[in-house]
Figure (cartoon, rainbow, N blue to C red):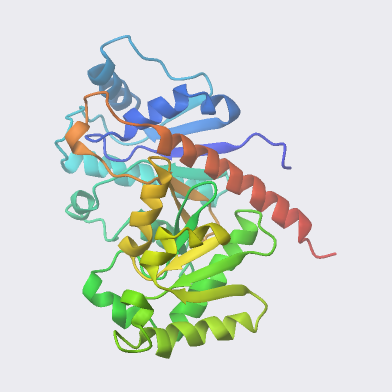
Length: 330
């Protein structure tokens, strides 16, 4: 089973951004030779994009890349997102999710979208993470941003900063730790993960003088989960934890909100970070950047994060197969 060729589905994302450009760069870096890659897009739209970017006839997709026809033709209009581009992105996401859930592909790698543009045409999700959770009919999911060595999970995802405090309670922290530990075992192949938890407030609340979330919710959750046999430590002040290299001692780190975890992770990743949706029956990764309209169509985009997202999706598939094989009930 583990030797089967891995089938990766790529969603087209926002065709007015850099998504198809970074895909092309990643595929040319030879990662396509290792997998069977399916791009969910309109073939004429893909051709128009690459002809506009590289000049007619100056591009070709590797042999192991197949375009699965999806959506109507859309002209490449760099840095000009519109309704047609948004609909193409939505149809691509829906088709890829459907085929992954039917086991017709092994994993999905999503190219960047502009969420607001999709929402303007009726897409009712705050991000692609939430879309895939809905598609899988699952309320148990986790957003992880990672490199090959550093993994950061988020206790809250795409919510306004003023709403974070109300979300941080003992039950949510316990849930996040438990799901993260499961993902580290199942998706990353770490048999006995060691997890660090960050505080919400500056200096982790400083014994209650800068907030009580640590005392009332975060530390009690850590102590309770530790009794269940999961090695979890904290809570740590976020600034010193990253600044002084404490993160190197842990297999995974839980941040309380989006920027608390993702700013340091992206700085450490240096353009090679990967977004992973954990906890779902399907495997989904994406590069750690957005549509980058400012450089769209200029042939300047860095494809390293996309290449890492492709390889990590395949690695998670392999790890899940091994985990399932090792945990079959006899």
